[in-house]
Image (cartoon, rainbow over all chains, first blue to last red; front, top):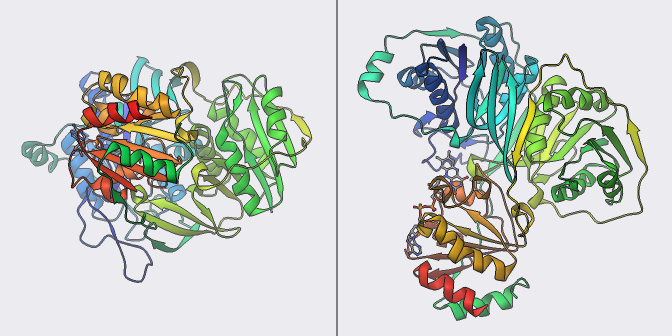
Length: 252
Length: 309
Ligand SMILES: Cc1cc2nc3c(=O)[nH]c(=O)nc-3n(C[C@H](O)[C@H](O)[C@H](O)COP(=O)(O)OP(=O)(O)OC[C@H]3O[C@@H](n4cnc5c(N)ncnc54)[C@H](O)[C@@H]3O)c2cc1C
């Protein structure tokens, strides 16, 4: 089974992003960038399938600026075999355009399984996976917390849904998006990074893939959410209850 | 502006979030049809017809667990008559609407918290640290809204219900439903509860949740939430996770117990009415997002709170 795994370069989860002074956009500036955490789960899942002898090759792909090479190196260090950068330049790309670019790569590579993170922690949209599945007319399993290969052409996937878990059978080829609970991504050690330097990264452009990017929406501006008014310390449980009785109608 | 509202139901009940999506739809226009798909729909379709603002209910009688792959093309067919396809953010909208958008060759704008005009919306990004104002340039718009950001619509005299034929395309590659685990609970649904009591890593064990949080939640008729750390440690079930990657809640009262207040957790609860934080560390970040802060050891504070209520 050949696996294509899509990874995105995002502002690191531990960085608190700042806004540009004119409020036009987020100021990514010199912020530390990392692989989107959910994509790490996707790569980890792919590598474990390969280690278990169930996957033959892992191709990592990223849509993004030239700097996304670092993200692909990380995927290679985790265990991907080769990588493809779709260099979309420094302009922000919307979800549909990303899905269209990934579709072209999928059609070229013909993977049995496409893995992605269920959402990217910058846009928090969680739409690229199912969009890609629709464009390829493939079945999907969104927010996977467990993937089991049942046979050469079938997976069983447990997915996180509202209020519980759902198990689905997914015929291959398919698209699966990873939840954080799918696995614990491995730490990349220096020797892995050194080895990853020898693995190939191919760079493609949207033009080379025959995709014309058109804008589907415009970012008019950004702001911080309104802050909660400063709260109060209460010194005892009794005081807390008195306050809540005065402020809410929900206490018995 | 014609709007197709995709209603969600579960175990024979209309999802409460659908009522909130109708309110969002009404901010966009008056011509609102609601579509509902599934098996044995008569009761939920009838309820849907009484939500104030719905002009017509379109009932698609499908197999009980219709796959997103098969439902999406049916919604795409219906979409031809509408300018907006809208649902509440939730399992159905995450599975199906991105497929619908891609098949319509439009982008999807999910998790809206404000509707400014027919084409301009606000949605949270970066774990809720940023609010982005976006203008859709697509002729047809596929949207989902966060239920807590919109009030629930009221009721009306029932709108007409029309049954639309649905033939699943068996040649369409699709996933098949095998099983579902939905722990039964006598408590209110987490996403819809007026009070949420959430526990963090400091609870120390599943037993901690059982012996400390559950009695408090019972007194308050509250749903139980948890931080990711508490879920990862196995103290609480996955579906209780509140945050960027879990559930987003905005109850009238949210009580965070032994939770530090990481941005990813705040993303799921910061729009709650009143926030109470109980934490032994006076510098815990959660206190900056709480209306009432109680510094103390949860193992003594929580039993006392439960006893005094
Ligand atoms: C991509 C990504 C997504 C994430 N998504 C989510 C999400 O959806 N939801 C989420 O919650 N987290 C999420 N996280 C994790 C988040 O960053 C934090 O790690 C997590 O919220 C911490 O949980 P906690 O507050 O329970 O634990 P901790 O941070 O360990 O805090 C425990 C708190 O308990 C207090 N305490 C200890 N003992 C006591 C006592 N006896 N009495 C009272 N207080 C005590 C401590 O002072 C501390 O503040 C995500 C992280 C990433 C990277």
